[in-house]
Length: 272
Image (tube, rainbow, N blue to C red; front, side, top):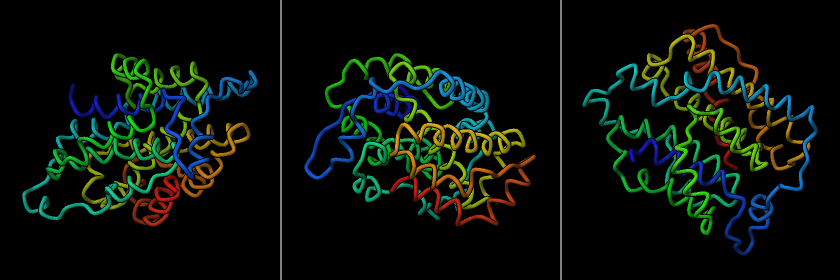
């Protein structure tokens, strides 16, 4: 199984989990891990969420950062590789995670960071090759059935419709929208660190769909926040960048440079 599939399977295991390891002083994590089978969403809300998920699913393949890099045949020169990126998630970032929601967000971030790590020859580092599986184990230690289902389904962000249906079946639509929001935000964040370097891989369609995905994920999280109060912080974090609309990659490049720090703040806020 290649690393891309491992990453996505690990995330699927985490999102499939309704259980978590209870540790002292982590009541928030325990509450977040509790099953929501008793939560009954109104038909109107479910219909609204279905519509939003349909839009996200239609844009997902265009927002797949790894596919964009590979299809654009993007590579770095030996000289560029010498300047290692200091903006990817670090071991310290992962060690500081307390709640399951933070771990879900971190997993989505890592799915993007792995692509950048590969460009710089860092993808064989133990941190990048093992962290996703470790996070999955921490949030789903005993749920082997979920692990098997994730392995078989090979869920990915490029297969958002199946991801959505799986989370809907498990009554965890909050996790679908949290993960999709985090993934899109991390792509924007990575692009904003060096637009001149990374933007050549973004087509006009990909640029439009990336901004659309952030907006749709924001709408989904906001709609669910009445039922899941813990989503409020994600809604607040996304709000400053949720209404960005572009008509192509050049316009997105402009926003990335002009609002560089806004993307960094949104990325940091999602993980707090």
